[in-house]
Length: 227
Ligand SMILES: NC(=O)c1ccc[n+]([C@@H]2O[C@H](COP(=O)([O-])OP(=O)(O)OC[C@H]3O[C@@H](n4cnc5c(N)ncnc54)[C@H](OP(=O)(O)O)[C@@H]3O)[C@@H](O)[C@H]2O)c1
Image (cartoon, rainbow, N blue to C red):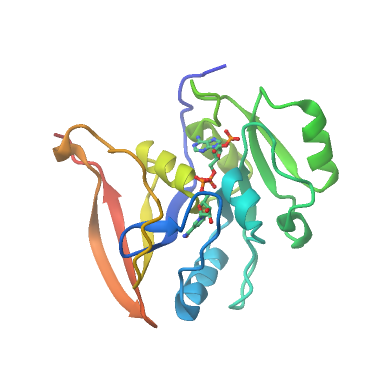
């Protein structure tokens, strides 16, 4: 069921993640790696508190088992959103125990109903959405569904597959990147060239940067030049 793009409004999307100087977000696929220092982590939690929703892919849930809550600063928890086409999310995942209101699991019409039931019992709300040609969740439909759920802002935290898809789909309004001063030679945030035409590659405008602890925070508004 690959549908045409939905019309209408979507949440404001902030893409934020931490990488090493060489662009790695993990040492190797399937392993977590702590990159941010204490001050950048506080910034991440402050950003979480400023958004209605926080989104990660199922890969990150299975590897990092994140709580997706605000703990290092005062503030409200954003609503967790997991992108999970086959409903692989375990009902025992920590995000269900974090006390946030009904985590949203975005899946496709192809996912088995039995897994949906188990996740609903754990407190999830399942969003069944149209899928892409490679059977993954259609991101434009997901954003339209999140807006219909009342989310006006969304923080996208990763991992690599989700970062790449959001950038490729040009569905990012702002990027906040933590660059940690080390070299990893690991799994890169973005895989594959984003365009064969190098004049059409996404760039950042309104660029700001600051040092937090030993990390560099680079922030900007992405745009896609017309060749
Ligand atoms: N440094 C950081 O800031 C940071 C932040 C977060 C994560 N990470 C790291 O990133 C790694 C995980 O990255 P990952 O790429 O394996 O997992 P991911 O990006 O968290 O999730 C990717 C999965 O999401 C599902 N998906 C469904 N629809 C999709 C769509 N339209 N586009 C993309 N994915 C879609 C796919 O699985 P299905 O086909 O089964 O649905 C896909 O394999 C971990 O090592 C984690 O530690 C680092």
